[in-house]
Image (cartoon, rainbow, N blue to C red; front, side):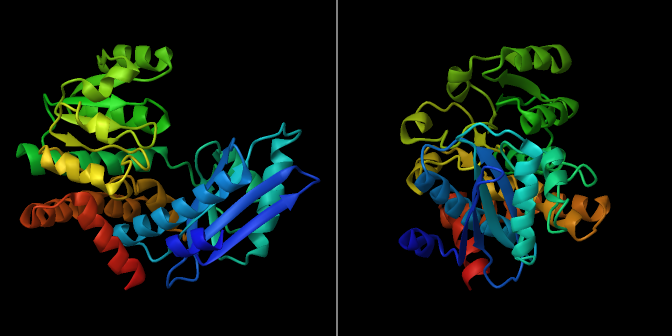
Length: 339
């Protein structure tokens, strides 16, 4: 555990057990030079405690990089609540988690993530003010999608010569809350949509509402398109998968898209532009951090527009240095976080 923390430079790892509510959770804080860290709270099944701890530690560092590259003055954090046993009362569970967040004294601000909702954050808020993404402040789906949309336009400009998406063929893999909202934005911009999801009902809705062309989930990555937009599973970009891609750019909202940085080099060698995930999908963190400190929509929108500008700079530097944007972004983030 200590070696894992040291490798990711996580300063604080809290393990919580509350038998009365059934709460078993981990909070990892990668605060850097900031006294407060913001990060999502996941409520998922994990094979064992070690897997939950490893995910919290890994994501805390990513959240710290995401905050730094978005220009936010907060550190990164990640909470993981294990969903391995039946829970009698979900509200009681999240209220117990809220009590723990309060005891941390503001070092961690909780937000929604995979498996949690604004209603869950309302329960956390019963016992602490160190929480965001409640029903009052709203969830992160829309701002995340808006940020990714700005990033897609930046990728189109860098690789295809124009930020105008009219007529571009865009393959959206995953039509969850963020993916579907993003598909709506892309449709409004005139893009020709290809859509896939493990849920055929979501695909049917995309067909009816966006005139999307359905593609089998397992075929999307190898279907010809201008921009491939992964919005579901992590590590979708493996060495094998990259060999089958038939697109000019990859720009999606999924976390952890790259199996490793060597895959990013493969994308670069094939002439496929890659938008680093923790740059392009920072909209959710931006919304969470700014809404928690009382900023309005205008300020959030300004930061979201900055995602495209940041990517344009990363793409330009990567092109000048003949390197992958992923490696350029990694070095930028490390300089900002670690000095």
